Amino acid sequence: MQPISAMPAATMPDRPMPVIWTARQRGSKETALDSETAITLACHLSLVFTTARDWYGLAMGLAERGFGLKFEGARLVLTSDATGQSLCTCGSLGHSFASLLARLGKPVVLAETGQLITRPAR
Image (cartoon, rainbow, N blue to C red):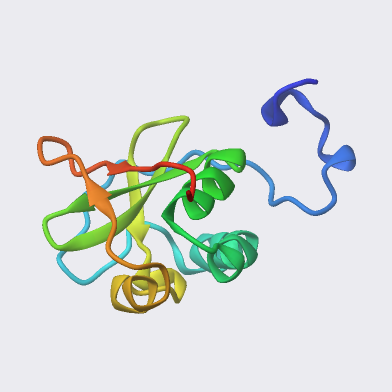
């Protein structure tokens, strides 16, 4: 199977067009994405966030779409696997850490990097 970036857009009707993610630094309450890209991203990932049964399922669903999660301080942020850049907080996509914590339980986090350590549910 070809990587998504190598496929023609016509063969990916349910996926947003690829964009170059920004490396611009965010303030403490802002997203680094323009509003149109943030809305497209929120729509593209909404089902992954809402159907995840645990942190592992959430991480795997995001990874299938080229994204990851990590903590920056107390904020849970979405990262681009392609660039390694932090894109925005999960809260700015409509899925706050508090709501995810209530639904999925406490995540396991690697202290040095803030990366989530995911394991399949037992």
